[in-house]
Length: 144
Image: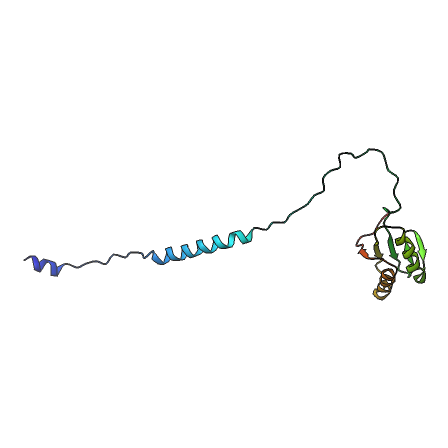
């Protein structure tokens, strides 16, 4: 009789979730994030000059070497060194004299908006021929 009861019973299938693939995927993602995270940190070193403790409150006369040289090209084609108008032919000799009296050959270049590109490049080439080693191009109007 016991065998007959077992044959007549219906077994129900219970659904069970297989978590092995889920654990595998989570482990792989964990390893990937552990490897990538140190590479995502961006660092840059900033060297700030230390404050001078001997700073005096007295105004100091500006040294002629400290006055920046600004070569300006105007829309009408005129070339100026700071506040002095010069011709393109005079530019190189004037800059040679100025740079001979200075320790560094740094020059700032400013061109007004309507200046043709070719004329601005001629002025830059002439200034380079006049001894300008470092030329910084100004992007905003300098107000004296």
